[in-house]
Image (cartoon, rainbow, N blue to C red; front, side, top):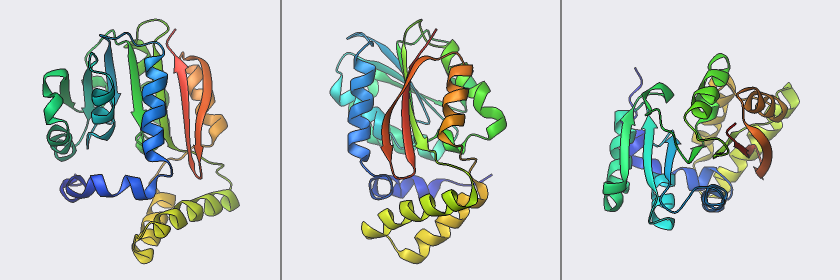
Amino acid sequence: MTSFAHIAHTYADGPPRQVPGLAGLHRMARILLGERVPADGRVLVLGAGGGMELGHFAEGQAGWSFDGVDPSPEMLEAARRATAQWADRIRLHEGYIDAAPDGPFDGAACLLTMHFVPRDQRLATLSAVRRRLRPGAPFVMAHMSYAQDDPSRDRWSKRNAAFSVSNGMDAAMVEKGRQGILERLPILAPDEEVALFEQAGFAGSELFYAAFGFRGWVGYGS
């Protein structure tokens, strides 16, 4: 099993330099959730390790409570440290979506995580999120998504890499990471993402975020 200890230790430094508009993404996600999640709502966060979105949501919405799920104990410990001031409103669960409580939740978010989920598990994961939501509850997801023909994959992955290098990351390490992403991550094209989103039972899906090779959608439980 891969150890995430080093990643967890340095997590807060990486994503802001790798994901264009990360702070804005968190803010937009909170706004979209806030359109329908009540003041005392309960929110599910899938891929909560590190605690970035949990912290942003908890700071911005004093009445919300959260259940965060992540398979890495190291990343969950990083989330626990990062969100200690809101510990009375956050419950963390080790595992995948099946480790999450049944709900019902008033909203859910999955940021920068779904591109790690294997293609053959994506629909089941999305469906499991939808089953845990109240009817009409919002689900916000954002992750890598771009056309998967060879020229497009190369072009968009290089643009993402150039963004990281422009933020001071080591070019050789970034290129190594880019090659690893191309070889291992099950990245889907945007039209595939939308099709699976809707097949899982989410209605009214809308694109709200697009930044180089990243895309984000909001949809609503049926």
